[in-house]
Amino acid sequence: MILQITRRCVQIGVILYLCGVVSLSLYAHYRSARFVEDPQLMAGLRGEAISRAIHPFVDSLDDPQTFLDGTKGTLWSMRLFGVSISDPLAAAEMLAASKTIHWPMLLSILIPVLLTVILGRVFCSWICPAYLLLEITGKLRKLLRLAEIEPANVQYSHANKYILLVVGLLLTACVSVPIFALIYPPAVISRLVHAWIFGTAATAMLVILGAIVLFELFVSPRWWCRTMCPGGALYGLLGWARPVRVKLKSDLCTGCMECVPVCEAGINPITESESIECDNCGVCLRHCGDKALVFTIGLPVVLQKNAPRNRAKKNVAVATVIAFCCGMLLPATAAAHHILGLPHYSYKENYPQRPTLEYPATTGPYDIILTSYPGIPTPGEAANLAFYIKNRDTNVAFSESVTLRVLQTSTFGDNITILPPTTRPPFDNEFKFHVIFPEDGEYVVELSVMVEGRMEVIPFLMVVGQPSATMSMVILVGSLLVVVLVIIRAVQRKRRRARGAARVAVRLPVATLKQAEA
Ligand code: SF4
Ligand code: SF4
Image 1 (tube, helix red, strand yellow):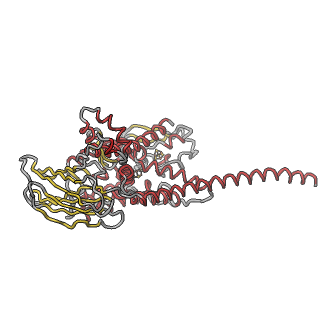
Image 2: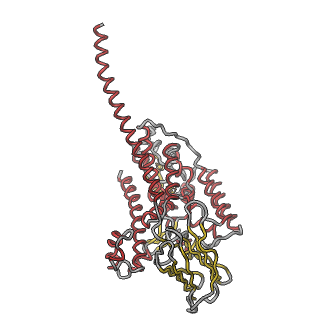
């Protein structure tokens, strides 16, 4: 019981941390723009109240900027008290896409990998916010039944997720585009939290999560984590030899099977708790009235004398490594999905730059600063974008031409080109561009610079106006409506059944009396 309460507290704590760290990031933007010092400038801004609440605390620190730089990111890639931590799936994907090994990236996965090697797939059951969401979805299936809507119970093979992991890594290596980041629930939920706090569009994330939740609700319980998640597959493989695991004390087991239906991983805790599918959630321990299931620390399963040899899982692990090595040999490379070796897709992740309205970046020996006037342009207004590039070691300004391209990000379909590739020489050690952003939204400002004989493309994410979240609200309200309707229906049915049962109870004695009279 205590274990489950602790697990719930950790799960909720992770979500609160995610909201807190993203709020801190929004505050850092306002702070860099010197908005926080002026109540008039802050008035009416998104997250005004929370930024005001954060301000005294951050301001009281000795070095506020170091604190803000050291606490940022999302579950995909974050910095916690100055330590970079990346999801192993993000690192694997980034390696496959860029085909380059970066030590900062390898160091950033050290903590999660070590924890998984010792504790197994606990990221899933204790940390991933999707696990909590899908556990709640599982409870909603009971509500559906109460509402006399019988959800289907289709079971898929657990092997699917390993296949997806291998195929996804190969595909990423072929096309040099990160694929998992688009569908991997912890990354999607992280972006969703970011979008809500920053007020940017969240439609794509809601559609992905909504599809998974609906599928689990009506078709297959715990479908995603058991059979689809490439991250879960990778964590399972990493935790293969975990010394901490659930063990059955066979002398205490009475064979009541209470633990089987409650297993979130969809395995039989009596016979399979040592398999790589078990995520050490401990739910089976709570439901075992005979105390026959316990956590043990012992020799890794693979080192035990009579350990069951699982040839299929071994083959998957080997296939993953081979797929990865083959992928690394493919010619296509992408340098744009990491910055200094840390997985990066946008400002939402652990972006090793100060989150300012001046956007600094680094490439090779050069420091780059993009400034935008105004900081958050309004649609239709010409924004002045200026780039300053200088050699960090020699302090000499960059003297070759650079190329700029501006794209409007699109939730569905391709990004729209707002400014086609435009090349400019420096003017007064500065590269100036005027860009008119047509509408509210997120834009990618792509700067191409020739660095040490190779073309580096540096993406800067800019927010223009107040990106609308109308579609997201429609989806959210729609989903809530469905849940409320199911609850109402469930309550109605329950009442009707109770009334029916009461009527039968009244009729029965009358019938018995008549029988006695006859
Ligand atoms: S399997 Fe994937 S979505 Fe499920 S809990 Fe693990 S990481 Fe999260
Ligand atoms: S076997 Fe027990 S600890 Fe492992 S996933 Fe199932 S319920 Fe959780």
